[in-house]
Image (cartoon, rainbow, N blue to C red; front, side):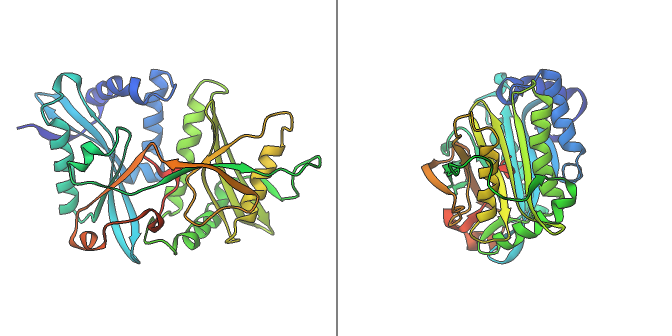
Length: 323
């Protein structure tokens, strides 16, 4: 019988070699390895990110990343096991290796007290539905931000954000999340990890391939709104945002300022996973369609089974937290 092992050393390097063509994100092979190592080196990554493999005769048949989150489900704190980067070695496919790995990781997680398992499928829902996962519908919208015809950017006190703003960002996230049945508990380390991951991907890639724009609007000494926007050849993605104003007017103003910085450029469409019911007044939705990363969930505890299913309007989940 194959064993479940926490992978590092030669087995990890082999897994990275085999998965590079799928998830290399335009990085060089050495940068791809550094990208993963740097995620593990963050405070959140050290405590909550691991990679396991189903190992037989010293070789990995299948592997997956495992994430440990805390979340809120119907007002109660729950533990969430996240699964990502599920991969089966080509010569081990169609033998049930990935299924065995997933089922054993889920059983270990349930035995350790996890309530829910969450994953994002890039291959459609059918395979994971056979493993007991249900789809949580999520929408990817494309925003058009209105920019005033007058010259210059909107009058908003925006600046580059840094780590001193994380406490204010956590507070904004907490208030926004209270209206939803299910959301991650985004503490300082998780917010830092989500933003650091985007910065690492941009910094390790070829010059100019990606950028990360992390801005806050400030009043007094406090951040009162923020945006994290990534850009690449596909366009802009609003990874996450927050605003003490429930209407999101400051978020809209920051986006206006970012768009207006280069008036010679065409006004970009901005993709986003917006919380249901949230739309800055300066923005309109140009398109809306189901996300390509299909969010799926499986109950691991009696409490979670009683709380499911979850509808799209029940869930707050930022694109920055997709794994």
